[in-house]
Amino acid sequence: MKKLFIDIGGTHLRSEIEGDGDIIRECIDSNSIALVAFIEQQIALHPQIDFIGISYAGQVDNGVIISAPNINIDKYEIALEIERRCGIPLLIDNDLNCALRAEAAYWKSEQIAALYVGTGIGAAVIDHGMLVRGAKNMAYEIGHIPYKPSPLVCGCGRSNCLELYASGSGMAKWLEYYGSKASPVLAELKGSINDALVAEEFEEAFLHAAGVLVTLGNPEILVLGGGVIEQNPYLATLLNNKLKNYALSPALQGLRIETSVLENAPLMGAKLLENHNG
Ligand SMILES: [Zn+2]
Image (tube, rainbow, N blue to C red; front, side, top):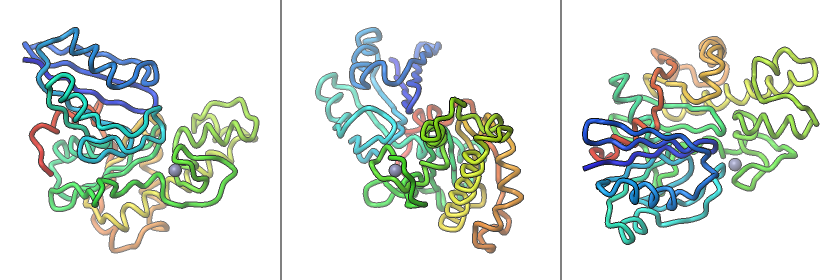
């Protein structure tokens, strides 16, 4: 028997098929194929698939995709649909919840928060060993809390979201707004006279996000991950030096700030979905 695991974000769809002692890995443009079409294609190629676990970069609740600001898909009862069409059980969770499951297992912590910055910015919290979900699995959806007004439009439709400042897609939108041809790469922006402001705004919003997360979630470990963090290890140092100005001080006592060392925490977390209830 085989299991299909998928991590779908704003840029890539990564999949792994496990079983019979080998792993088949694939990475494609996430907008090149609809998720359900991809799953059906994989089932046709590998009829032995008997379980599907998905890490999804959007809001999902109980097997239903509610919205995805950075992925081109609408409301969809994906678990029910795949069960009905293919008779295969499917579990899906938000990518940050999946990533944090993998991080909690790695850091062996029951009091841990994740802040991931890539195309978007997302957070998740495990409190006393349990994922904090909220009524609709929307807890700690940090990218779309109001931050400050902008002339831009967020993937969620509003124009004041934190994600418009503290994310890769946010930086790209600001650069386009200013008519800059620069790439949204922090190191390059910081060295540029014209584009340094976009990097400064990113850092300020990133500190704000971390401060809110640490103050509200009160973790023992804050683990940083995602493409923008990977490319900019200095952001962990920035938090260590400046977070005191953005978080309530008792929440900082004993706090460890770590950078993820996992190669693909969301995909690893998708593999943990089958054995997790929390
Ligand atoms: Zn938003």
